[in-house]
Length: 256
Image 1: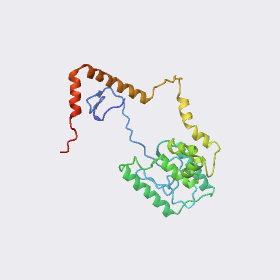
Image 2 (image 1 turned 90 degrees about the vertical axis):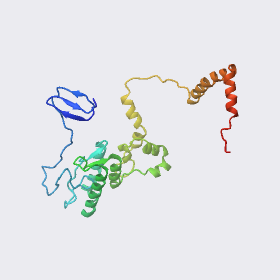
Image 3 (image 1 turned 120 degrees about the vertical axis):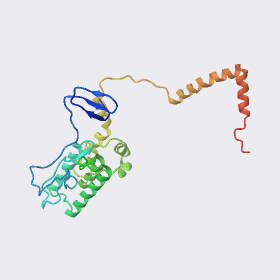
Image 4 (image 1 turned 180 degrees about the vertical axis):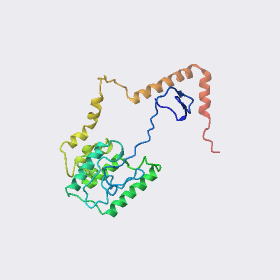
């Protein structure tokens, strides 16, 4: 049940600003979020203050001599976290196996500060919004580092149907398996059949298709229903006919 803001709380009752009362309440849970931290790590590795910590791309501590520690899924996305964790793991694997490398400490810290300032402009200053990201822009950002960002512009010329699905359909993890490392042969089919994969599992019963007339036919019938009675009244009633003739003689566009 969705309620309005709370006005006051008594010993067992909660009063709302809309005048309603919920009585005999046993407990109230304050959903104010969580305080995160790494008590199992020394503060010299990762230090958390007011739910803020320095992590490059929300993954790597920037001050380590060797990039041997990474945080997977330590992020608050506006969307699903599992696809993010997967693409993070792909990039981390490249770093650990020296197929890719991190930039300098100064570059990583500049990126961290840039993201922090951008978040402060978007949200209010609070511990609630410190590791929040939008799913698609963030996954695109990591995909460029992995080398698996789909080339949508080129795809419009080589496979326009697939490009249309990628641009105007839901953004799914197989889009990041079309090119680059870890290519999956079934990625194209998974993208093109994504609607069936979503719709079919939630169909609990078969519904007969109902034939609907075209919008043009419907509009024509409505116009006829309105005009025919008026036409009959015009032919039978002299006063209506006279009024129509008088209206037709009016100069509605008098520029004099």
